Length: 104
Image 1 (cartoon, rainbow, N blue to C red):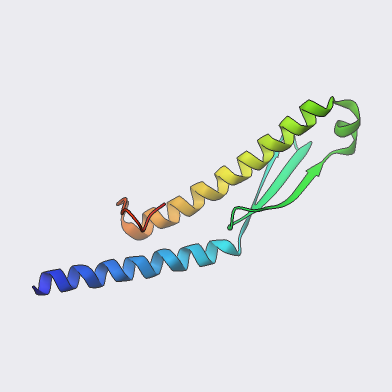
Image 2 (cartoon, one colour; image 1 turned 45 degrees about the vertical axis):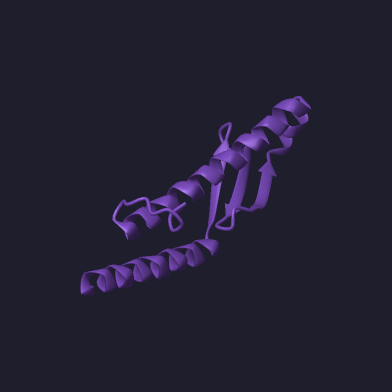
């Protein structure tokens, strides 16, 4: 029975560490730039868009659809950066194990 108790304690520690990681990541931001820095997007650890920047010359010279597609690409790239870092930190905390209900 003591093995089961130790396993439960370890699981609780891992769960607390994962929660701590998620809290720490909420304070971070990730920025991605596309088209040679003509468009950039910044997202938070809460997966919210914080900022979008479009080079004024690019905005004036390109069609609306190209500009919108570039904005979407920058947001997606920034979101992927955030997700990869968060997943990496959680994976390190769990020793690479995928734990249902604890890991993303």
